[in-house]
Image (cartoon, rainbow, N blue to C red; front, side):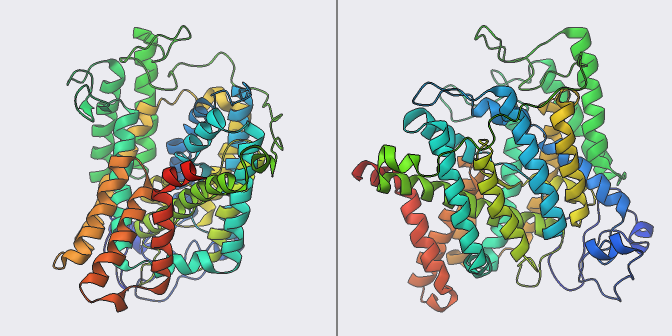
Length: 507
């Protein structure tokens, strides 16, 4: 699936046959031969034919991306449900509704302005950081104000060209490692969401429950994984979307018969053999009225008044670094999977993409739902055929509809979406063959990048370890000229990021 980037290589979506490719399948933009003439204004604007895609594939890819990442509408309010230092808790329903609203609006803007198949939503990891600061140091309006500030700062970096310059300064070896590392990262997200990988007793992680695949939800995941894998290798059109839908139907049937229920009960009880997030049951109501009351509830400089300028700036810096480099990794990975990167593994015309992403960070804070960022789950839509911004428009519209039809989407359990993440992870790690293996000063940074993403559950940590070790090791072997000057600045920024805890204690 992820062929080596080059002038004559290209990707096809699962299920595309050689005939499909001849008729306009999503192969590389750099394929040999003349670019197909656009069929209409929509085709011309989104470059659908030019990227060897079709409207059908774009719609299909947009649907797949949506169903793969729709879980964030439920998960984000769960993560942000902690009480802040003043004892205030964000209303669950409002967080869910505004999460869908901001994700939908910014994803549509990404599709129309960026014209690439990237979807955005509240950033996982970043929202956890925000929740910790709210519980320990700041109120919700104060921490959301800092999120808005970091989004505006990143926007300034985009407008000055710094963010794009950093993106292009990262060497090809690390960009490949980032894509591979994100493949493993997606895999562990999928396995964790399905309960296959869990914290162990005496070990960092364990397999299932007491070393066994126990409970109906795990069986649903396994069946979904095998079904999706069969569909992909048989090249069935829409394999990933079909896998999600079929697995969800199976989950609904099992829940109707076995009445399993949620993993976390209202009384505080935990049932490890139950559904992790959404319970796959047909809802009583299909339509619900969204609560948008929390929009605009932020204090831009309240955090500075409460904890001081230095401490507040360190919080802004930590969120900004996570947001900044998560996007670098995601854009690299999704662009590589879609074969949209150039010979230097840079995304052509990336400035609008980076600008929309930075504005989404500020929009998430203004909506009180945490920083929004480009989602790595966009690779699921790309793997199912998406190549243009039209797919993002489809995903965004579905998020906006989700505000009103959330009961309908919540029937898709995480165990039904998780198989797609694992399959996409398998597609992405094939790029490992393009890494250089004969120079340890290149191998070690690539390895640290790949290893730390899944093992620390953070794209940013993996990129940081890779950048610091690359700068150090290429210098000590006398290859300092291989290190772009900006890489030294980035390495210094990551050193501050990793030393943030002692710096916070000092100030």
